[in-house]
Image 1: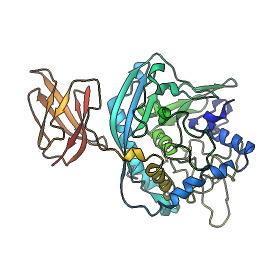
Image 2 (image 1 turned 90 degrees about the vertical axis):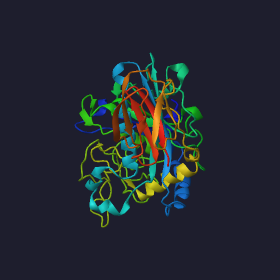
Image 3 (image 1 turned 120 degrees about the vertical axis):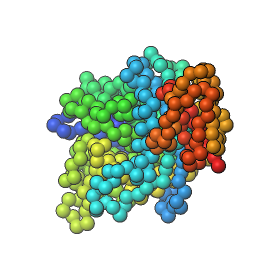
Image 4 (image 1 turned 45 degrees about the vertical axis):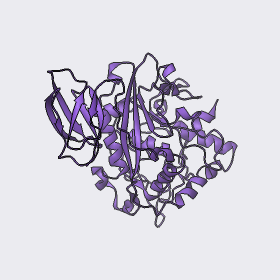
Length: 423
C-alpha cells in the first residue's frame, strides 16, 4: 500500500458501508496521518511546526488583500457534468464571500466564537475556464488519486502554470471501492510544498499536479445523494474546504478520532477548540467531543469550514487559520500573488475580442457576425450582473458608469471575455 499519496492529500469522502444512523467515518487523509504517527511517533507534532512558526510572523498582518487567480478546468464525459457558466461564476462568488467573511450566514456563528472569527483577506479572480470533453473516468484508489484529470494526454486538462494560478478541476469523481464498500468522494487537495521538518513525500507528486479537484455535483447541485445516508446539502463550500487544505490548513480535529473519539490531535491552530472527531455532516450545536464540563471549555466549532459539518452551518475561519493561510500564500505559494493581471479572453479558443482593453468609456466587440443582434452582459468578480444590453455587431458598449476594475463580459451565453476598466 502506498501511503505517500494518501497521506499527502485531503479527500472528503464517506464510508457508506460503515454508516450507522448518521455516523460517517473520517477521510483517508485522517487514516494515513494516523498510520504515519504509529510508525513514526512525533510525526503529527512535526507536521505543522514550521507552518505555526511562519504564521506567528503574520498574526499582526496588514490589511493587504491577497488576490489569487483561478483557472477552472471542467472535464466532462456526459453533458450533465459540463457545469455551466452561471454555476462557475457562483463558485467564485462563494469562495470570495467565505474568504472575506461576507457570506450572509456569518450571523449564525455562536457568540462564544466571535472573538476568533476573521476575514482572511483573500480574494479569487477567475482567470480562465477550460472545458475538456473526455472519454476517461476518474476514480481514487487506496494507492493513489485520480490525478489523470490534470493531464491532457490521459483525458484530463493540463494545469496552467501552478506557481502562478490556483487550478481547480471539476469532474465526476467515481466512488472509492475498498473491501467491497463504495465511498463517494467530494474532492481532494494537496497541501503546500514541503516545509521544514515535513516528511518527504508530503506534497503533490509533481508540480503540475498541484491544485484542487472537486466533484461537479458540489458546484452544480443543491444536494449530494449518499447511499444509506440520504442527501446532504451543497452550497458550493466543498471548494472552500479543499482550498483551505491547499493553503495549508488541516481538519480542526487534527485528523484524530479515526476509530472513536481521540482528543490528542491538533490542527496546529491555537484558537480552534480541541475536537476529538470530525462532525458527521450535520449541525449539532450540542457536540462537544473533548473537555465537556471543564471550566472554560468550548464546544466543537461546527461552524468552521475545516470541519465535516454540513455546509449549511459552515461560515467561519479563525484568526489562527487565517494566519497560516496568509503565511503560506506569501511564502510557499507566493507566485500566486506576484504576477500582473492579464486581460486575455477567458475562453482561449474563440476569435471574439474586446477593443480597447483596458476600456475607459466604451468598448467594441470584434469578431461578431455583421448585422446580427447579440445579448451582452457584464459581471463583476463576485458574479453579480451589472449590465445587460442588446447590441448589433457594430455598436459600442458604454461602461462609463462602472467603476474601474476587472469584469467579465458574456456574449449570448457562449463567449465570455475578461474586461479591464480603467480611468
